[in-house]
Image (cartoon, rainbow, N blue to C red):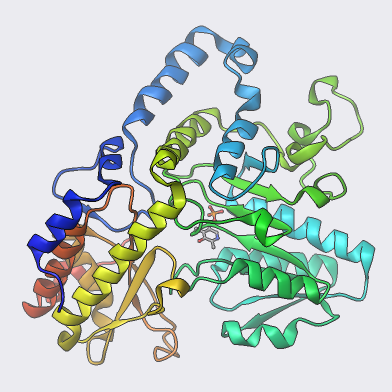
Length: 433
Ligand SMILES: *Cc1c(COP(=O)(O)O)cnc(C)c1O
């Protein structure tokens, strides 16, 4: 039997993490199920950014690089993010964007392999990986005379773990389906084949417990504006295993990654440690905002940290799936994410069965008008069976309640039952979906 609204309220009343919600400013009447795409605004952010603008920049001017510790922020915030990722201090750096950091680490990994064993010429990834990852990999493959080979399912990876494989590059949680790879097992399999392992943690950092060192990964990168609540376009992060930090080279050899940037020497010498993964001057205002976002996750440490957040995330997604199937199943709603919570990140995707498959976008818009914010990801028009249009919902235990999950499903039911989505205004597509 599925839960009633009063059962959900009871769950909220005994939820040890419920108090963490006071860290955020959420607009009233909104059920936000898109923290996987853009995290919400922490209460501390505006004050902190205001302080950086008025005091550190406005009053203290260029002195703040030293007096306010601006120069150390990328490493300091990197170390904070590292606490969520099973990293040791000195392994994680905040810099640039996810796309740029992927370019750096994938290039570093390919260079290492080129030096070790020039015969390894293949990068393996998934066709369903986020497009920027595939574009960057294809671009580097061309540069290195390597080949990017894409698989259509995780089962197809194993046969490609052979002596041609240079790098296995996976996103741990798929941005569409929410499929969650077993990081330790996959890394071990890649290593057994002599390959290096690059992980994209865009939908993992702040969403699920990650232990990069325990998994023995080689390189990892991820996003600041999703579950880390760093704000729109927040800087990203890069992590490198200690065995590679001193021996690897990344191609964007800018002055901020130099051993002594303020010597202004003509020749490049990489900084010792993770700082060599920096390129140019960091965006300070964005860094200040990112730190506030990361702090909202660290605030959960005394309450059990990522393990406790994961436990609530699983409970929220299980509840959403059970309620959706019970209430909306006969209206054509189908689960498009793994049913097994152990194979699912902190998101749930739904698709609509025929003849409603083309209504997905309008259904999401109608939900948004009702205050339930999720998003739409287009399917493959030629293969809607395999890659359907999806309604995507992220579940962020820092600020989401069980009652909100209940209400979100009720809104979905109403949108479908009353065919609200048919209103012409819901068909208009913006530039961003
Ligand atoms: C969100 C996301 C990105 C975003 O990259 P940007 O450089 O920040 O635009 C990259 N990869 C994956 C897997 C993502 O989910």
